[in-house]
Image (cartoon, rainbow, N blue to C red; front, side):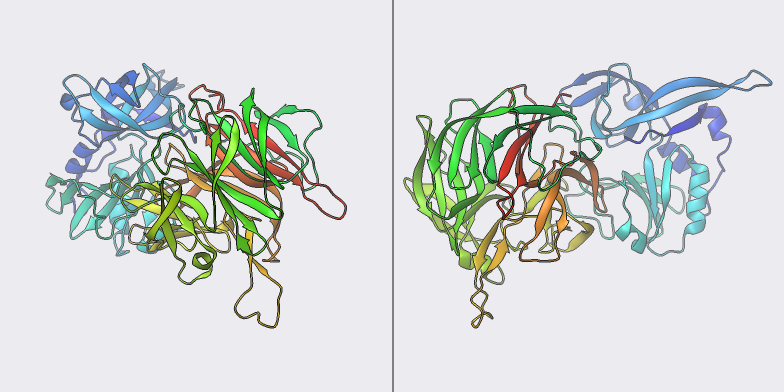
Length: 576
């Protein structure tokens, strides 16, 4: 978290710097709306906080308050007068409900714990940007900065600047139709100031994005009881041919490296697979699936299932498709140029094949927010535009129905982020491994310059233009991407050659976490370099402490002329 230290003067001294009027809008109305109100955190309650502020403090639902910490007093060296106090700022909260004598607030941004007794201040040090789509109101922006110095002014943006800006816009002030609008982080107009100085409380939007407003996701709370925070650890040594230690376990940088396999790992799934209330894991290796448990962050195999010759399971998707209370395991596999998948269940400690399928499987969010099992055949995958089917399990048979895949081009490498209570942003990996964000109307909001993902899992096929060339080409199934409980995304990020599109070589990978800041996906954390190619990972509570842990499959060495395959499991426990 970026902590900014400012010199906070008393309210009377601060107002002495204010001008009486802006060029077009009465300053006293703006000042009244943004007047600081100081309070205290009474106590945390669930995922919210009680503050000792109510309507008598001139607060309103939706107001933003910053947590601040008082430091040294500022004493004039000659007169001895106390001029103020050095403040450092922490998380930002938003008022959600107002009662008599107190109010409720939720966490908007910041990763420092909010504690009982912390001081808060309304609209103090809140990041705000001035969006001038006409490009003709620079003088007004300068006047606003002088009139409202308690805000943390981020800059003057034109419509073009806003498209490429990379900061979280918690508040935006924007000239609109001869008025001045205050827009919150959910694109809602919360206050309008007219040129005559009168202000009106805006009517809450019904979910439609205001015309011309900035697209911004719902803020991502950073509760310590959700996914583990990924700190930007320095890279560790390791590479394609750096195998894990020969001992079972090594702890480094908060990570547990262990569970060595003299084979290549393709996929991992961790869930309550038997309905016993305990987590079990399935790992896809060369020629077999291994079932087991994690004991003190180390994988211990209990049984295995041999695969068909040349069959490779590339993706593992646990899901209770028939709603009978027990998960099935949808194991997406290939065999040379064919899709060769399995539907499995765990019975009496063994992996049991339910059926064999010619579909690849994954879970997607439907338009109404429902999590559904979706399948793609080889023809679905290679067609343009790509198509897919929704999967239902009835008895011992899979039933399919058409599924609208738009705007996706395959069922992997994608997830959604909450934009507001009714709408989502679609995040996806492009064919060239760039991250792309799509608005609810499927228009492009942003695309990364950097590479993310990176997958070596592929289905072989013969292109239609290769009648004279019988060499099959790979169709790569994109890397895993998940939405965390904090409304951020996690995916992999690999160093390595992408020059040869048919045979990428990823020898150094990590897992990164990104937030939507209103304009772009901002990388906020990453694991250390895990020392090899990361084909899969799981975000799951493996130690039963109620917090999600990060479990990654890492391929340290691949089968080659001068090397044997070596893989391992890396566990990053959530110890916050």
